[in-house]
Length: 481
Image (cartoon, rainbow, N blue to C red; front, side, top):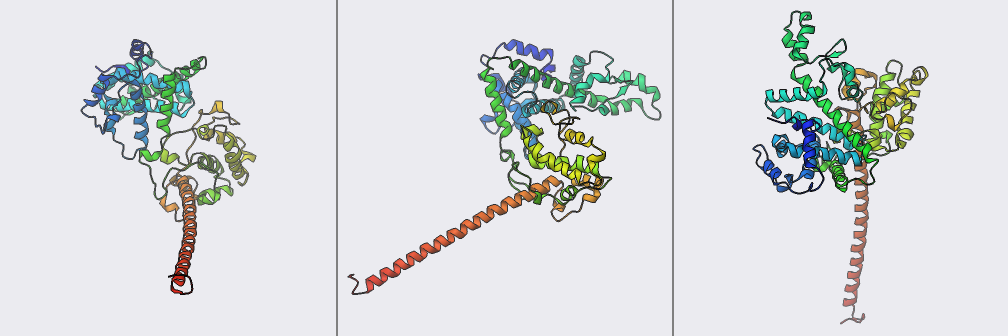
């Protein structure tokens, strides 16, 4: 029987495994049983010895590496990480989970990119493992996990306040009756069965709840508990004189995995715009037609969506994180702008100017939209940007071309390049790449021109020297033989 700690390391069984380990002593020593489990997994595909984790620390890094490559590698081969779904590694995996949480909590804290990757990777790994289990076994583990959190038959929706506020789950995903969560089949039938007409109540239960909703809630609860645990570690670390060096070293290795160039994950080029794009000052000439038109001011009727939902995400990502779609890694504004200087001095002024040019000016009759702009940047419903509020909402990504056509049709006046891309930010990145490429080619052309001139000068000099030699050797009065 698969242990519940295989899905939830924070379960009582998982905590028992950690207690049995006792200390950090020998944490980096090779574990022959782990290597044997990995190499003998029938689904495992191993390219070389470096792909085999030999100890707790290496397994911890493989967990993060799996997630990053899975999200970013164009030719990701899941069979090279098949051992992560093998319940035979449970006790090693649980230790590696705690090591990761503690390393990230000590070094980076709860609001870091490393924490978000850890939480998201744990959720993805649970889904992966559930998909490899037999249906009945998976269902039983989900029921056991839910029982740890929902030990009361009647759970009010406010129990999920933390999940809802962190946007890990939406209220519309829950089935409620008088504010109480409905998951159990019998409970569903008693409450809704008599009210369902012309449909099979059992089919409705399977459609609305079934295994899918239970799995979703269980996964999100474990993700939230993982995040809470990292917060606890971070708070305790503040009181430490000096954190364990093993954790600090592991944290640095996690950061290294996350910062590896995308070329190592198969991202060498993109439609002629090769290489990752670095954030830099905005180039207005590279803006797509829709953005240029919106910055000139939007007439009444499309002002709110145009400024809050369109211009705010576009300007902020173009300035701070233009490579978001290629990198495919969720970040916060502070990850790219730690002091919020660029956001407050470059991003917001441009957005406000566009809002002022609207007819009528947006903030004149709707000043609350400044709060909505902050919310779309990820700082919650507050009038000012403060780090303590970041994460209360999501940093919205730029609206796609299809959505612009649908919601803001007056802005969509496509040019030739528009027909080749699907998002205004992709347009901007392509134009920026073209400008940079032209500069490079221009520089090369200049260098080639200088080289050609230099070559001609050298050839000319050699020619003169040769002529002079000929003259000297052929003139009997030159002193030659």
